[in-house]
Length: 90
Image (tube, rainbow, N blue to C red; front, side, top):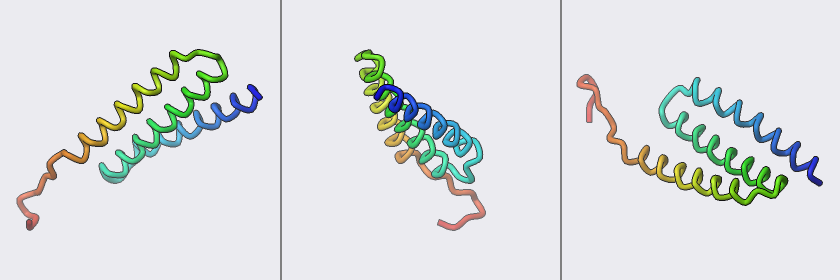
């Protein structure tokens, strides 16, 4: 059972790499923000899997901190003012 969970954790780590590539190549800020939220969710899932496999409840607490940071980050992104260039109409 632990081997299956470790394979799942490795798969999620592979998804993190793909998410980082999307953050780097994102065509606009919204795409980058969505990729960062995917990154945060995958990180939390990986940490929870590792906390269960290794019997380390401290990792579950760290995962909860990451959840709070991701929520605060997404709220901050939504509240950012949009910039309008002088040549654009309102």
